[in-house]
Image 1 (cartoon, rainbow, N blue to C red):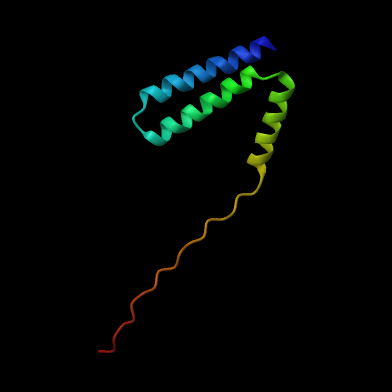
Image 2: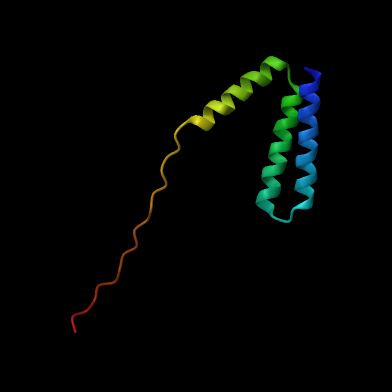
Length: 80
């Protein structure tokens, strides 16, 4: 299991490096969050990690609500 923890820590380090090299704040935030989750996963017991991974995967499989489109009100045309 140490190999898996080392792999997660290495991937977390790669995410940190990418976060520091990007100028986009949204990408940086996503990479920092990912790095933190990977490091947390590497630091937890194996059973905790497996349970967290299953929960994450299950949430990804849930149907996402459809985005609603907003209708714009068009001005009335005057009779000419």
